[in-house]
Image (cartoon, rainbow, N blue to C red; front, side):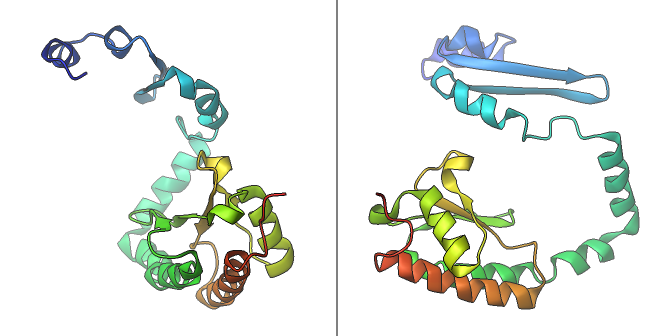
Length: 186
């Protein structure tokens, strides 16, 4: 889309696939929802198909009714539930410190952080398994989210005191990993 003719075409109703044949597109439509459109390089098609069913394109009626109930409860209800998130995020950020400066990504508007593992421990599945078995913390391997060599840490599902305990275990586990323990490639 760098040439002027391509940019002009993008502003018309030309399809993305006409502009870039190496891009695959998918459209979903439901009478209750606006059309959703995703474009991605063809090389990513296998990975996109893996995550497709984890993306809530059309939430169920029950989910929509729960959301309406939450909205009807007002801002106070939401404020109660997010009050501790800033402190929880700070605890998890401190726990990720052994991974070094620049290792952590995300966290802006989300309830999870993604962190790059050190090169000697880049097997994210092995690292997550060891952190769970030896240190009692449950993380998601980055490869499950399209980011091999990373870990994904959610910080919103525990009460604050349990987050403190989990963050301390996570920090100890990551320090062991950095020092050459958990998650080494075989």
